[in-house]
View: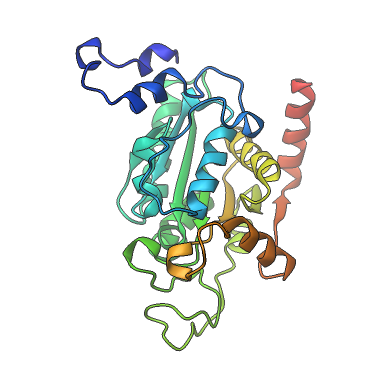
Length: 285
């Protein structure tokens, strides 16, 4: 795919907002960029609608900067805070109904394999904890059971943030939220372990407080999904609005959760995936 497909029609150039034109002209397409180059290219509109200090915004900037081939990437999103951002990001994307994002991604990946048999097309699901671990859990896990070659990324803010801060299956036990006024009664769902047992060849849990480490996890997940099987990355993305902390404390909050053992970054990789990764890394040297 060339950059020509990204060019806007000259007939509309005079009515397209300047920030959108800049997104096309100065985006990551066709450039070898990464997290270290953040700020030298435009991956997301500055005035996006997410709250100040939003953990999702941090994670999505790193995600967009970590794509191995942005021109050949399609993101499948779902209803949630993140769905407000992708129309303003430098990436092709589809908004699916709440919870069915992995089904849409599965069909899309198969269609792209037929349409472009000699070209890698990365199909990446990016959704919140409600769409991934609650309402969409059935379709998420069945895409893993079928060994679909897609990457699933959960933006884990431990709540239904865009509908007022209700508890989700990913909320910590004891947390006081709407619909859990006395504290959540049961533990957080162990999604990384479910992903591992359901057939994901690579599972990672990370945080935007460690951008280089998260970039490595994301790149590994996307590349291994091309060649081996389904992959899963869970990114901790605290919500200052619903968890009532200052919007300049997000990164420190992440570091504190890790220090206290509440949040544990980790990776799991199958032997087959490790062998493939070793071969690919050797070729790239």
